Length: 199
Image (cartoon, rainbow, N blue to C red; front, side, top):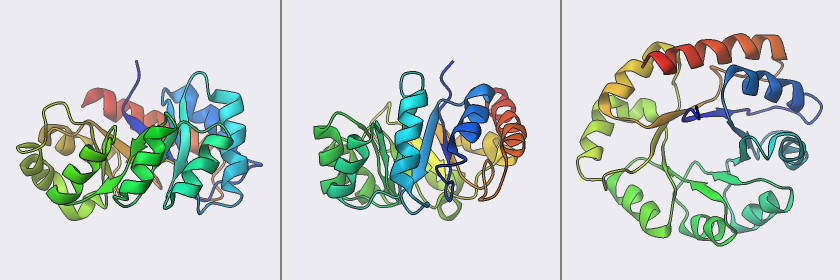
């Protein structure tokens, strides 16, 4: 099964990306994001795309410009995630045939993102909105809109977000912190999958 979990590897380096990605894939997570404010992020994305591009959705996070969208595609990325709702970034992403997940927090941003062609909405920081905020937003969003809670999420609070109607999650420090080895990531990823599947 394809779980709606995006592993966010902020701070990962090209030298460690593959064993960490392997641990994440082995746990059953098939969406992996390298934020562009990580060291040599495009090198890491390229390695990911070569190794896992056929079996996983790999790409970049913290994408702020259309120029960076092009660079992500140039190295083989297929997903663009942003902390903000930048219509230029969304339209460029879709023009290049990639998946677009912009960050939103208000109804205005959410509808703007959808009208620009976003594949899903990244509610960030989700800790500010809370499950009740998402539930209220879903009452007005188009049925079937994919929603991802990002920021302060972990296995201990999945159930509350599922009850509110969330599609999935973007998981950062609960799955990887700079310096973590593949063994630690594997344990965290396994716990995340167990909690997700139970939700």
